[in-house]
Image 1 (tube, one colour):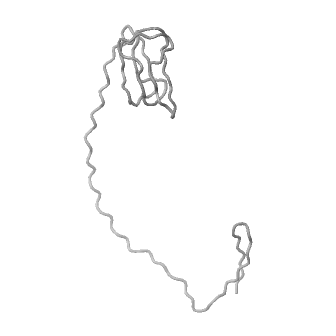
Image 2: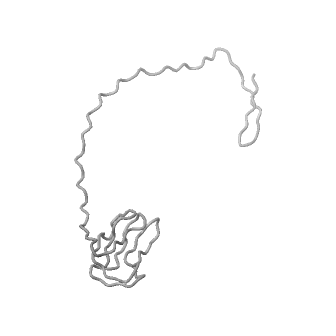
Image 3: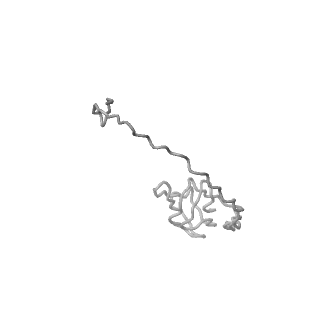
Length: 130
């Protein structure tokens, strides 16, 4: 008999293992290698058509850019609307929070360059104001 000490869940146990004659440990052999199938040529998928960006004329206007990546939840103004400094122009969902993008000054919306539900990145153009 051989004695071993085994620790289980912080408790130490003394274990005795009986040796037997004629017991042979199993012998494992590696399976024969299977040839890999010949690789198929990769078919290139047709390039996705780029999403057309709305043409934006910034001439005579001020750009309102996205401060952080997110999704446009609401657009609170329309082209041609007048607004006051501090009015909410857009509501952006970022980091599971609703962030209001406010007007930096009094003015008028010359152009909206995004749409509701659009995914936007930092510095993406949202609107042009005058």
